[in-house]
Image 1 (tube, rainbow, N blue to C red):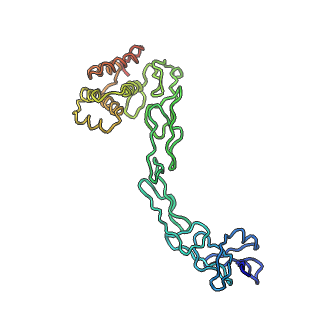
Image 2 (spheres, helix red, strand yellow):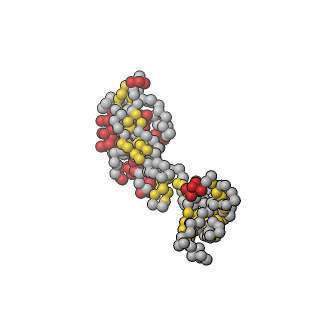
Image 3 (spheres, rainbow, N blue to C red):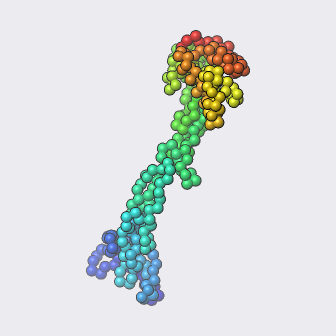
Length: 309
């Protein structure tokens, strides 16, 4: 015969088919079940020259000795920090060579059946072999699908009736405040960038301690695409900041946030609530007359004047 099929589960003295491995014993109800559940490989016996069908070693083990006409494959367990993930007939287990990088953590530690598994920590996702920070959805956009360790944040523009006044990796678009439901009147309709402005103005609860009105006033000014000299003027006139400090912040980008921060700091120095009239005067003092006119048209000429909050 040119090919002699080794039947690893035939044991003349036992009714059940037993597969003897060095460190594992697989018991099958019948020969057909063994053939279906244990994968095999072809090996030519070096002594007889016969081609044999031999059992592979299970995950967590490696081949120690090839099968012969007298016995099936002999397998041995993987040593520490080594593994085999699949049925195999390799002579050495693979080394656990997956090491977690920056912004990753160990999700599953190395064991005999799989390599170490790393995953990006919160706020990052895996792309191009690196963990990259989730992008923020800009003002006017909300989070459609939050980022995961394997996918970046997906943003969507806020539809009519909704807004987002912050850049965020987690915040969805918020519904405009229903002024009438609060027994207030709608003074300034909201946009995709900010909420409805209801009157009389409510204290609000922003983390900077701003009222709802102050928050919208300042945000409106910060969105006016101000030039460098205008931001210098705000920092110098309202806060008396050195030019070098303003320039250093300018060079870091995020100019809109820079303006917002200056206005918030100015409000703190006033130690009182800011009215739209006060803001207009401050803008004129900073030689930003065009912006002052826009604020007047947007808020004052709509009869939205506030003496105190």
